[in-house]
Image 1: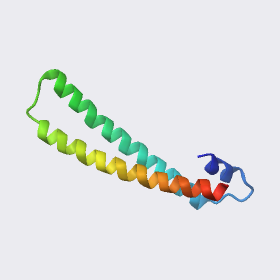
Image 2: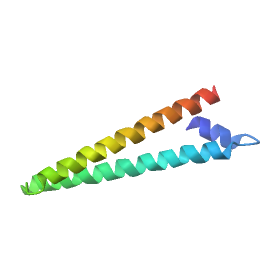
Image 3: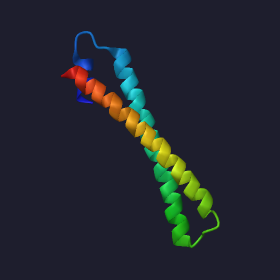
Amino acid sequence: MDAVLDALRSEEPELPCVDEEIRRLIALAREVHRAAEVMRRMADNARAGDVTRKAETMALAAERERILYQELRAFGLAARGVIGNAA
């Protein structure tokens, strides 16, 4: 993120690059929020002793985990690119 801020501070910022990194960060934040909602639902069901939708919730959690992993991986690759370009 420091590289993004530095790019914005320059006299001629590379805005398409900055916009893309911001888009990736927002996508990552959305996936984290969705995963947290699934985990909250699982915790609520466990507290209530409700196991009727356990298989469905577990499948949803696995899907969210897969999507979150992909987003984190893409963000990590992009961050390495930005850091490498800033060095």
